[in-house]
Image (cartoon, rainbow, N blue to C red; front, side, top):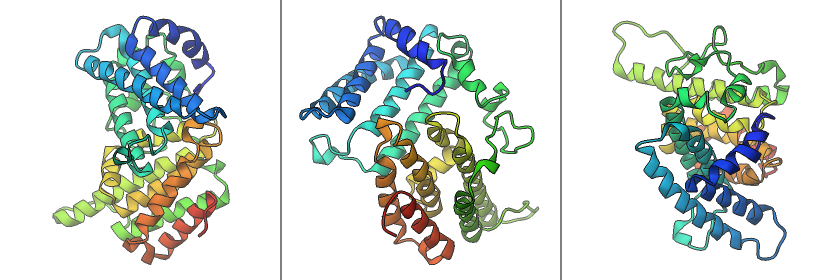
Amino acid sequence: MVGIPEEESYLSCVMPREALKHEFLLDGIFAVAALDIARSSEEPDATKYEHIALEYYNRGSATFRALLADIPPDTYHLMFIFATAAAVMVMGLPQGTGDSKDEMSVLGRIITLGDLFSGTLLIVYAGWDKLVDAPYPFREALSVKVNSLEILDLNCPVERDGLPYRLASLDLLDDEIRMALARLDSVNNELHGPPQVGKEGQDAAEEGARSVHEVYRVAIFWLKENFAERAVKGYCLSFFILAGQDFAAAVKNAEPVALFILLHWAVALDAAGRDHWWAKGLGKHLVIEISDILQSSGLVLIPDGRDGIAWVRQRVGLLT
């Protein structure tokens, strides 16, 4: 669960003490611990802990949601931690929990994850001044990737020069991944037109197409950076915040290019599953679901679309 070394002391010492004073956080800790046992233990009856995890999580979530209306100043960092635990729960729970009508697809789970991160970002915006001075090493965590607090500006442009975000060098990408990610730009250009400067008098349809192209261009940019970043554990999850809400909405609407981009992100998720129990197997299942959806879309009529789907499937160990 530790992304940077500075988090270890907080998670092992500060957080447990705070949990004794805040029941929602204690419930969150018990929920994640129970789910960890369910997913990692070799005990024959380990799966019973899934239901225990859900019980604790549901109880903690009810208190958490009630606090959102008026968050106490000294509780922002705890709310942030619980939101992170919620993300682990969403990803770590198996698809079936005993009630078939409540089963959720992996894609549905990832969409829920995106919503959770959007909510977490709202907590960060609302309590930024409290978070940076909280016991949680927020400044240290941000310093890994951020040179300036201006990164929280929603209008911050995605330009390598002058961006306060410390970008991983795309030179770190190997040739195979570089070529695979280049296909994303190619498909975006073919289906939504190449990037161009808007002209006076341009009609709404052309303006809208350029806007869609830009949404995907930004998402592809951050996906490339995601693949290049190797120092921060679990960094692949940051993609949902960085790609933006318009991209998340496109995924919800099952827009083919958005799903094609998410399909490639699943490769990073599959790799994360080798180190994190909560992500184990999710990447491959996400690839199966999305590639099946894309088979009935016009994207498979494009050579780069077909090649991209085949590459992702091969990368996670599936037949092409």
